[in-house]
Length: 114
Image 1 (tube, helix red, strand yellow):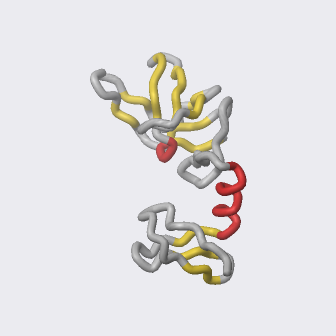
Image 2 (cartoon, one colour):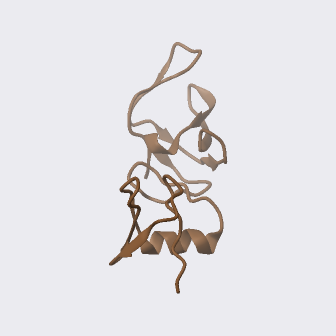
């Protein structure tokens, strides 16, 4: 008997396979079988951008929406390129330096790999 992975969204153990997808009946989340096996092989967290591309340290990304800065009067505009990112395991996935703003942390859901 094969062991199916728990749902990555709600951690339910009642997942089932349907063709090339795993499906969670509790939260209706679907994810590809291949992605689940890649994550299991790597043993670590996989960081993805807004388009689903895998991010790595040193990548260049583009901001996909205007981001208001906390505690400051500035805005990081959509289309700003950020070079040489560093992935971290915290509430914000990316540490970087942006020209004109300095060091900051970004969430991977607001960037796209270039």
